Length: 134
Image (cartoon, rainbow, N blue to C red; front, side, top):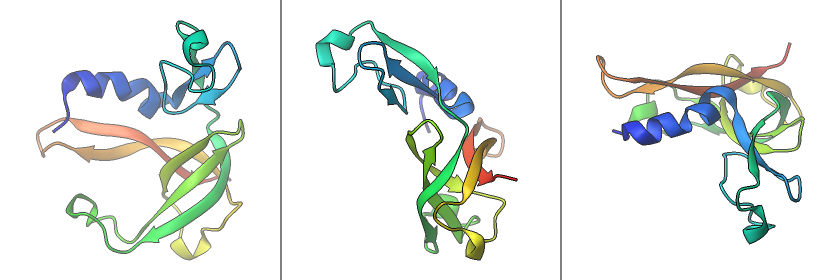
């Protein structure tokens, strides 16, 4: 079970694909960072929210056949590294696609979907997944 504080902190990234941009060197990060690893001290107080592009292409992928118990109902399923149109790399599940149709270079877009829930009567966690772009 995750903490409530962590849950609320992660909502902008999970719901809106919000990362950060360094105002010093213009590098973009996802998930968000409070400090740019390139600029280090110079970036203190100069990291701003950045809305990551919701479209991109499959950079690489894997089909998961054996999964942890929490994902047993999903298997087999595809996970991928997505290169967004603004150059960031994001790992995510691919959904609404036949597994034999997944390919490197496939155009995709982010969607908001249910990730999991703490219990049948508990908190439902939502976040991003990617679907083929139509």
